[in-house]
Amino acid sequence: MKPNAYGPFPYSPIIERPRLEWPDGARVALWVIPNIEFFPFDEQIPGVPNSKAPDVPNWAVRDYGNRIGVFRMMEVLDRYGIRGTVALNSDVCGQHPRIIEEGVKRGWEWMGHNETNSVRLNAVAPEEEKRIIHNVFTTIERASGKRPTGWLGSGMQETWHTLDLLAGQGCEYVCDWVNDDQPYLISLESGRSIVSLPYSSEINDKPAFERKFYTAAEFAEMIRRQFDVLYREGAESGRVMAIALHPYLTGQPHRIGALDEALEYICRHEGVWHATGSEIARHYLAQNTARRQS
Image 1 (cartoon, rainbow, N blue to C red):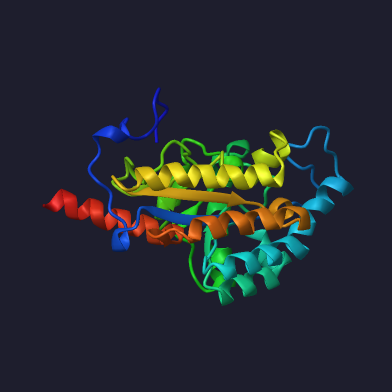
Image 2 (image 1 turned 180 degrees about the horizontal axis):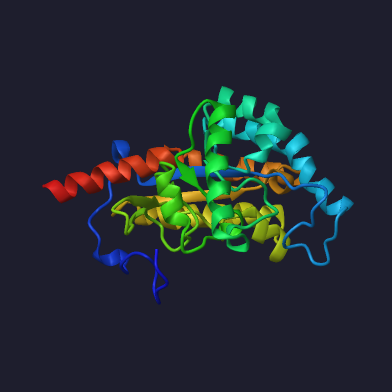
C-alpha cells in the first residue's frame, strides 16, 4: 500500500452495507484469539517501562502463560466447543512444541504473529520484514502441518509493505485493523486482495488488565455487554465477536473463571457461530463474490 491520508480501502459506513449472512442464520460469529507469544530472555520486553535484560519478573510472568496459563485456557475453550485461532509467535514452535501439539490435537487454527513479541515489523528494515514474514509462515507450517492463512502483527504494527508481503505468502486475512465489526476486503495494487477481520483492542485482556486495571469480573462484564449489543445488531446483519486473550493474563487462577463465565453466557444463546478466522474470512469472501456476480 502507498502512504495515504486514509487507509488502503474506501470508507464504508455500516448503515449503507448489504446484509451479511452467517451460516444457519447465526447473528454473531464468535472467534477467540489466544495470543501465544515468546519473549527472548536476553532482550528487553516491549511496552514495559525501563525493561532491561535480564528482566526476570516481567519475563517470568509471561513464561507462566506458556507453562501453565495456556493449558488452563484450553480446558475452558474445550468446555464450550471453541477452537482457538492462535496469534502465534513462530519461535514458540521451537521453544515450546508441546503447546503446538496440544493445539493441533484440538483442531486449533494458527495465524502468524511475528517471530517473537520483542520485534515489531515497523522497527526493522524492509528486507528484514520480508525475511520475518516468510520465516513465520514456513516455520508454523512445518511445526503444525498447516500453512497459516491469517496474520496479526506484534503490537498490531505494519509498514507500507506488510499487506503485499503477506499476500505474497498466501495470507487470506489480517487482523491489525480494529476499525469494524464486520469483515471487509482490502484490494492491493498487485491485484491481490486480503480480508480484514475484526480483532479487538477493547475486548482484549492486555489493555483491560495492564493499562485500564480492570478486575476479572469487570472484564467478564465487558465481554457480556459487547456480546449483547452485537447479538442485537446481528439480527439485522451479521457481526463478528472477537475475544483477544493472553495466557499469562487470563490464564491466571484468579482470572480464568471470568472467561468461563463469559463464554457460558454467550454460548447459551441461539445463533452464535463458533468459528475460526479462516472460516469467517472464507464465508465472507464467498458471499461477497456471489453478490458481485448476481
